Length: 255
Image (cartoon, rainbow, N blue to C red):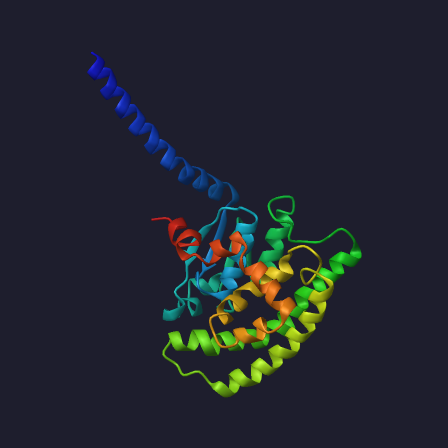
């Protein structure tokens, strides 16, 4: 009788452990169903990673849907019905469909302003204006040369294309001027918009991460304040999750 009871107990414990292993997946699937968030994109895309970073900063669940960029899936139907411009990512929240990664990050940050990391500084009109100004600076001053440098030194080699060193040299010169301004700003503030991490800093992350694996990294490293800022923002756990394909993408996909 004692042996039988022991056997029943062992089976019970094995079943209990299995339930505990499955619970996180059930919880995640329930939250995805409740929120209805879907991210159509590619886990290696800079723009897709920008959105993933915000979702992880907020601790939100989502369903990733892979768009195969190398086969041109983003340039034909049915994807074009989601984004007629043929670019990733596309974010779905029920009937709301958004494209342009920075618009998506702002939407998520506003909707979930009381959850997770506070990514918006809306304490006053002045702080809101400063935040908006620096987001515009990232989009129009930093991103153009940074994206071209990422394309030339990271993306083109993946496709077997040759890097154009003239374009690299030209855009490094442009980026240097931007980083000189950043260096001065970071002497006054811990982060770009204010003394706390915001969407402004987060929006920089995708290109910076890729450029740190290229010779262009010297532009960040030789500026003391910029180097410290880069080290701090790239070490955030949410960003590490966004860059981890298994954790942020593959393991979340439905079979």
